Image (cartoon, rainbow, N blue to C red; front, side, top):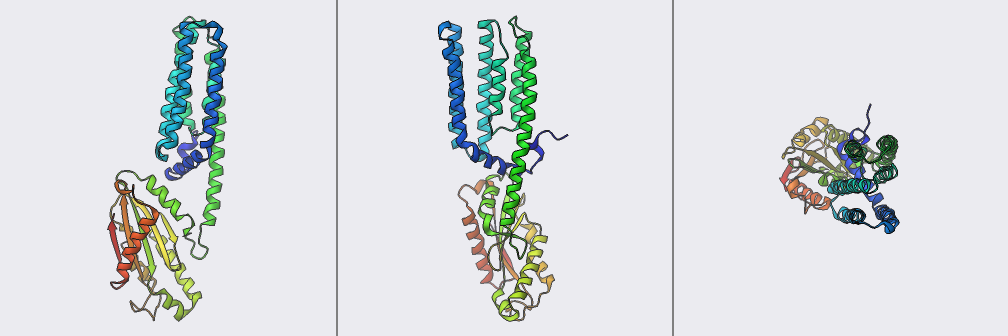
Length: 361
């Protein structure tokens, strides 16, 4: 049975995009939630004002530290790159969990008992953190449960059924979180499908330029060491002459056939950028765009007659390809990459067409 939606529901890139969208949608609710946590902890602190002892004072200092760590974590999360936000959340929660364990330990020693109320409240406080996946939350809950079991076995304080209630509460929280994870991902998948419909070119079946910038930006942000992003700009040579000679309906058929051939090269994405221009995007571990090397011969195999071409007697294409690695993406953008590919395409067109040039940025 597949238990953790974050590990199987989407591929790696889509899961990263889902988490990015989740961060964006929940960013504004994080501060109110942290404020609510602060109010709850301050309420506990004020309730013990008549029973002030050195140990109670230490407990309250730890509660204040939990509040401080949470808000410091929110500060760094808001400024961290998207790929690092989850790790900042994990560090923040791990620190809070350690402080909560200390509060439970000292409270148990001070009052010689530890009821289930506090631990159960922590379960649902963790449940309310939207950016942590089910796996992350299970790690937090398990650490707390093991602490409670250890505390019960190694002390004489009264805990009654607190570890059991915590375990049962955790099971309920896991079921709730799993359903929530599935629901959110199903919703995001529906949004992607609708977005894909809106970003599909009806004539060629390729993507249109609508989501190009977002896609390239996402690819660059998730690029890993040793990986390279290739962007090719492909243009049909003297296509205006073809339309003038054979008519626009025939021209549409040519675009459809060329698009099908470009798709057969199996890049990650083919985008119809303009009338007869296509953008091909591929991410792999090779600096050379080997997947594009046969583009001219594959188009030639279509053998689409083009009598008015000064290049050949059939339809041909020219292309400019740029490649960028992780070490060089800091100053790159979709616009700059397309501009570099367009510059190479221009060079090809000025040196005879029906060819392609490549540059590593």
